[in-house]
Image (cartoon, rainbow, N blue to C red; front, side):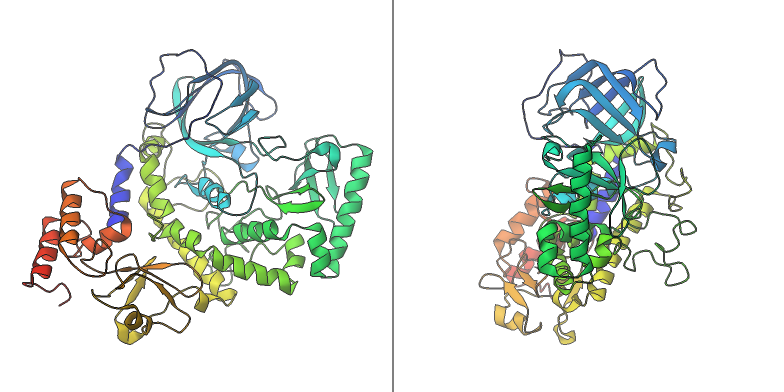
Length: 551
């Protein structure tokens, strides 16, 4: 990982690209707009854009250079400023509508789309991270999304996330509002003409995202259904709860809320939908002020003011329905088991693993040019707060990235400890083994070690997956994530050091072969953090017998 961190931080000065799969879309005639290193949205309007109503505009969307998608153009589109707290930010977020349903980058046909500004979030990746994470769980209808550059009347506004709006529809939240199916949003502070209700027993206030204008019959059915569901919660009967709540989605949704520590969980942006007679968790939304990115003087409980002072600690999202669900032993047990199952994904958010480069570094590398333009050409300031709600940021982009990485790691550690599953998540080699665990890798193992030898270095619950020898890329798990061994010099992963390792390292040095993160670690024989001629020469001398890599 040490080599990849330095590469990615330097990649902030390099252009990155995004990749999309092909699909049939509505295309305009070629406009002459040149595609760049990232997709771009061009907005033109003579109207004053405001948060109260849509005004006319022209929308043009151009894929990146070499992208799969034809250009989109709509001269009869409309736009407004979106959001609650984010709408007051200097860098405005937007909702826009095409004049007819349009498929953008294969995300499905719809009129309404969102441009998230991430004005209060200096790394620019928190919202997209949660979207990507949610797509790997059982949660359905997570908004599809992609990073874009946005130009407003010819001027670069910066990097945005272009994403689906959370609304009902066949390509969005696929519910049938004519058959007593609903999209609910927790909302305690707004009154925008939406229908609001307080749940019959616990008095939890929701706004109806769909249907927007329910009939009296729908309201009557919904109140009766919610009363029965809350009665099941009240009596803590898991079988009855299972009749009204979809347990897998409620578990995964809670884990996302709690791990990323959704700051507004009991205020807004937290949604549930009712489909086929059950309540489902999600879709996820609005995570820019999460993961420790909120001001301690405003969010005192969130930041454990008066306690540890560390926002990565504490249970915060056991509220509303979840305060009842987590009192049910069967539900809490499923949360713990599922959290353990998700460790491979969680660990790879902030650390390189056998799955590949960690999410933070790979996302920054892919979009680094656009992120850099956001702060250089568009003029947004990394060390400046644009809201009284956001955490006072670090003065450098790299500093804000490392704050996020550290927060994610410490949050995971704290939750594993709180739920008493640490021993089932982290492999702990014996002190006498000389092995160390860092990120998703285990260091210190030399070549030609057989599985039984290595297994004895861990507890009885450890499962080692390897070939004849335990080599680079072999894994050990005690029930959670798979931790990969790094055997210095064993680049090809066969557990011994031979000519193949020499050739692969030399080819990587001259740029004709690409190594995975764990292979890079094994090839870095001199510990310099990069591949050099010294590394492959050390490997060659080792297998020829004139040098010992492990002395």
